[in-house]
Image 1 (tube, rainbow, N blue to C red):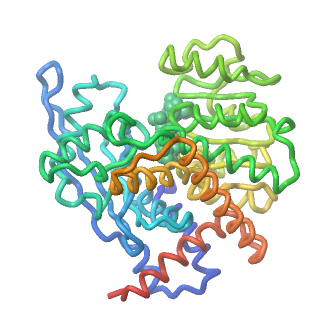
Image 2: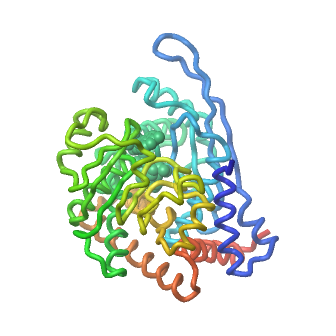
Length: 411
Ligand code: NAD
């Protein structure tokens, strides 16, 4: 079975082949700068001791301090974190932020933890890594299983060692040095890019049926934005399964239900389907916004949607990607599709360093501009070089990192 790190390597090599990168430079660009793994032993509410492993992989800092989310999920392992850290390097470069790439993770199931247990795990993790992170070194942010509350604990724990410095982490609550619009940013970005892509293809949102997998931070905000832009969302899902209504779902009602019930479980105004079936629906646009590796050679032949936007990281495996390219399906890759989050994280970091608060309108306006520019560049590159949107995105990201590495002196 293919691992996440092999998938990233394959995508990297495909782009590097078009760029004539030598084997030595490839090795240099792929090798992580630092990898840390720490023990996280905490006392649970019932007095038992529970031990976990926390990872932080700092992939590349040629273009600036390293940036990347922190994932709490039972399947987290070093390979996955490595691969996600690398994706962050190409992503920050692709959207031209002055950052490098990193990622962190703890192998733990947040749904089985009380808030106090989550807090203890987070603080213990910071105890283990505080020396190697910081506003000029490596800046964590939310990812699957973590949220603004977790970021607030990280800030607080980091400051116990290093003094006041809210720029040490992003995705914080707005009341605690966060920036308005961060929480919606990734989902909004998915929506903006969907809109841009439809524009390029001359297709109207009203005629575009959407199936969306995952209804957490990214999925729910993407649903809200797409609904407001008049896309027709016919299916959504979360860990409890899929909810399908061919005539289009009442998205405000789904959002309210999910807020009130902390998920979609029990939502009645739709037909129940499985998460696997959701991917295979007869729709124009498919948006996986939950886990990686959900579309592989195994189910790719059954996927009907001609357009896929990778809101999640690595939802489409390379074997499926090849088939889609041959079939003429359009795949907007993760490193562009979900870059909205890191763009607004960058604004938050700038705000923290300037001690000047940004308003929501400015955040939205600048986010829209950065993503629209990046989309145009990727689209043009794909056409000029006759490559997929993914290969074009990687070429742009890798090219920038490669040049910064050489200009700075690689050794
Ligand atoms: P989240 O924890 O807020 O939500 C995850 C969602 O996926 C939940 O609705 C959950 O029920 C659902 N889910 C879990 N297991 C599932 C399964 N087996 N089948 C279907 N659904 C399942 O996470 P998030 O922050 O929304 O992140 C989702 C994806 O987007 C991840 O791949 C993450 O790396 C990526 N991403 C997130 C951000 C961000 O700003 N949060 C930024 C970039 C990329």
